[in-house]
Length: 82
Image (cartoon, rainbow, N blue to C red; front, side, top):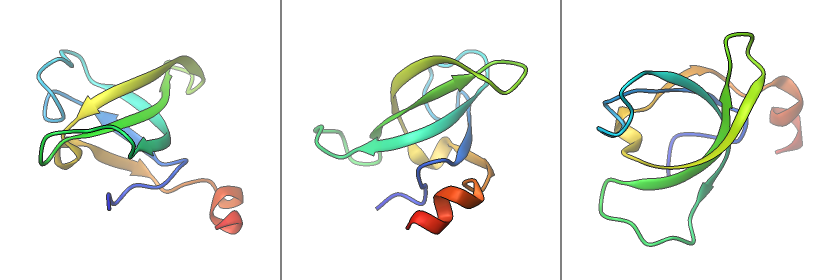
């Protein structure tokens, strides 16, 4: 189980995977648990945010969760639904 929840704002950097040359923010939609991965890796889905904090692109990423940093907790509305 990953320490992330839908709605979390994550900072994706080179620490998550060498493919990410420039850091970016990602609003997490979900962790894709139906895909086979290597130990210590995971598939996640989310929206890459632009400079204004708005969704710029929907992405599926293969990452090392230990390299992701949570920037904020999920919005209050998402916490209430759980």
